[in-house]
Length: 385
Image (cartoon, helix red, strand yellow):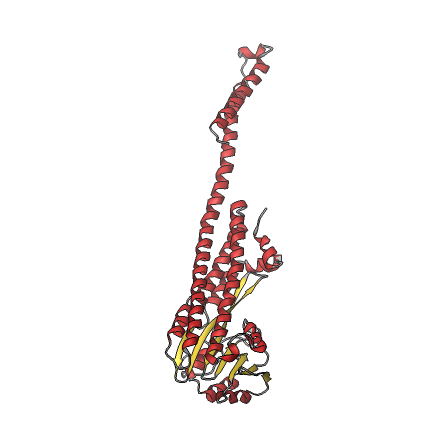
């Protein structure tokens, strides 16, 4: 019998406790917390105040630096933030990745050294921003949702990735260690393709493309979940299936909320006339824009499919109820005339001619069996069962 647990064959072992935790009724309350983010800034605080709005997810801020050109690559972890300032004026392309946003002193130094606007750094620290691209004098600012999928609880997690593109440098900011950008780092280390031969604008495109490509993997897994759910609805529409449908609908809602604004951001990136983006890079940006459109279309398709599952579930439950009621009705219809006959001959009257006839009892049985057989034959002829 197919059920939702069969997803484990595709997504790994799903523990019963973890799945029950994901489907607990109180999870609806937690979902609201994932969709609505509180601002960490105090009311009335001046614009550009550096206040981290989320929880501290790493013990210490880590800064990693990549400096490269077509012939060489230098990768190292920085002990002091001042070591990153040299990439502002050096000809090679520099990429500084910041893991951890709780240390506002470090971020303030980066802001002052690279000439980043106060409001930009405020957006970096304020989590839950919509995906966007903004043009400033000397740099471009991006906010992207970086998504991961928990295969144990079948839950989508969103992390804000902030990216600043300068003339020969790129800055990225994220909440914790671990991301979806490792394929880009491997391409830099191996020197394959054109990434080491191009500027910072192509690096920014490659990072955005890695984020968008991860969406396809998540959608593929959610699609597997939806297929198994659809089979479960058709074969065994148990009550827990409805809870799992609602769980999937909420995950798709979070996915749609995260990805939908990305279309406008990538469209603006593809159409920008900034000198920071070469014409040859814009061709690749248009390609990743097309990928984002495909992701959005897929999300909408899955949402429509999941929305239809609720109606299918209710129809399946109603159909099963009708089948049960039909069987009970047929059984009742067969036994009604038999009960009538048994009731007549069960009455306590002295004057009943059949009471003293030896063959009356077997004749009554034959008549009752004949009536029951005739009704069964009639019901089958009508294809009622």
